[in-house]
Image (cartoon, rainbow, N blue to C red):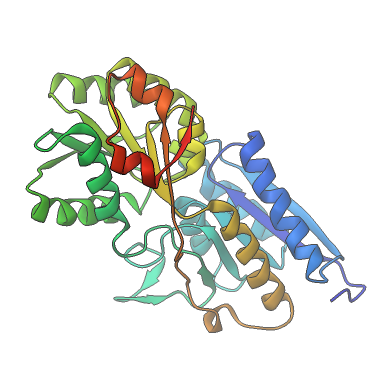
Length: 300
């Protein structure tokens, strides 16, 4: 829908501009252009996993007068929502329901829409897969980010999922990637066999370091994105992230065409990938059960 007027898109990403993340935003830009939005410019800001940077970066984009803010990661969406109540905010990834992005019990802020990373049932599925890999009765944990408003929600859902499985899930919290070593060493000392990684841009930005430290501490991991397994984490179960960026482009195109964010539902994925890094399993001395391998894509 080229109109001759340049539309300015602000991009706020919790993670870092590594090749995988750059490819996702490249897909978003190509998808937006394919929908007829050729008169666009992009202002991109990266937090490099430092959630404390996001408020200033969001304010900067708002002051530039962008037409739409597109965010990756719940902390980025939260920062954008706090920075403006008028500029539309589209979450390419993030969790709205149950975080400060909601207004009241479940009603999203009027200028925020997008795509949720934590649909019902996914926490239970991750925990079930981790238990199948580590063995019934193995002590398990969840690694959470103090700066991410979706981490308390992920913890609550994981603990709820643990009850019928007869599992007690211990929670460990970090505020920066510098604390990975301390947190995972504490898990090892506590006899933990494996842990769920709460969804979050900090973890995605530092996924290679997270995978390395987990292997050093002989800890099995399950995370939300295939890219984690490709970086060395043991398992991932989650929606293909590329689809989020295609869908985000559709939402942005509709908003540029006059649709209000409040008229676009916060959507949830319906298709999921299960990935196992077989090299990491070998390094941890784990043999994936045949029924898991039959369902998984193997990497490593």
